[in-house]
Amino acid sequence: MFNQFTIDPLSFFLYIIKPAFADLVPGNMPYDGTLHEFTLMDNVTSKRSIIDIRRVKNILQRRDASCDIKYSKVAGTSTRQIEVTELQAGVKHCKHQFYQGCLADWRGGDPLFGNRAIDGFFKDAVKTDIASNSYFGDVSRAVNPASEWSTTMYDGIFTWIKKYINGGVISTNQTFSIPANVNLRANPAVAYNIIKNLADRQNTLMRNMPASEKAIYCSQAVADGYAEYMRQIGGAYQIALYSNGVGILAYDNIAILPEPIWEPVLEELGGAFTHAAILTLRGNFVFATDNKYGEEDDFENPVALHVWREKKELSWYWQMFLKAGTQMGLPEHTVVGLSNFNL
Amino acid sequence: MIAVDNDALKDICKKCDCTGFAPALNYAYNVGATTVTITDASVFGAGDTFKRVNVEIYDDFGGSVKGTIAAAAGNTGALSVATLSPVKGLGIKATVSSNGGCVSDGSANNIVASGSLGDFDKDFTSSETGNVTAPPAI
Image 1 (tube, rainbow over the protein chains, first blue to last red):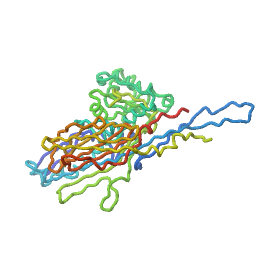
Image 2 (cartoon, rainbow over the protein chains, first blue to last red):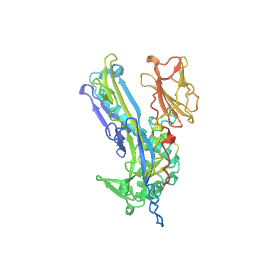
Image 3 (cartoon, one colour):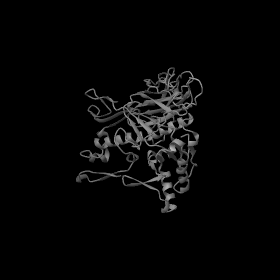
């Protein structure tokens, strides 16, 4: 997780770029999610209607002596929308301003703070913001001036879950509170109960879907506590599922996929020992973007990332433009446990 | 007789805008005391109410100060911009959101003693109340 840069022997020095949360966010631009668990819709220019069609049963009738038949409906409908919002990010860097004082020695050929490094930092920062907003974004959340994480750019999955619970789409039987202020790594039985609650509270239709089509997403503390519980009760109860040769946690063959950035963001939003866990269908989280969005380059093609040097200002500029939005495909097939439902 | 119930589909398009929502924010910049106060003056459509304004005051050197307005026609209080450098002017970006799901972003650049934010984007999101409904009884 470390990157090292060295410069020429005449001014030998070693750099270590400390791991940042950006390193926990895998994949390429614009988005590739636990991010790999999200379904990507990359052609939403503004909004797109989602029409939910629900097939019905109860269509058979008994016959009487008449020649009249009762005609019934076979499906009901409701609508939702997936929307994207326009976002932008920019960085500018004047090398002359940077290499002052002791740094003047390095002005000649230092690769670290050259444009390529800043390019990487810029893209990583955008990726991290996309990850934190896609889960925790809420445009109407009061911004905390001291916050480290970006969570007010667009509505994310937890905001949608809150809306769907309030709207009655996710039944309250499928939600439960995680006890507050509990260190799950020191109380593994509580972590086990969280996982068990998720599985026990599935609705009938969801329970009968194959385990391979479902997944449990949770913060690292929940996964660690559950793993510790498994170790404490001994190998006879070990439940492991191998995916690509790497052992992962599972419950009833449902994979448990911890999301590394959940724990730090939840701590910032809800205080220490704030936890979250969701059991849902894989691919249920949708990330929407517009792969044709950007500002024009020199050839009048819309381009999402502009990098150029402005001679008059002696500065390099980076500008990025993208659209982002989230939605859930089948919100009714979600079980969620949270320490605090009003993050 | 139709085989598929279309009641929820007939007015999809009518839930596409936030007519009646007119975001407006005014600011006051006290150069001597290095404070900026932003006041809400937004108008909302019938049945819709104020939810939140998030503001960010920034300089041209990467510095920023954030604040929020929690009540309709309220203000941020005097936000201290002492940590920002006014050499190339200060700017304000703000996001206004309503309980009905209308959201709009506006800004002011190179702020003076007092003025208003402008360039509010009209790309409102659809009303939340029409966007999340329980599935119909079958």
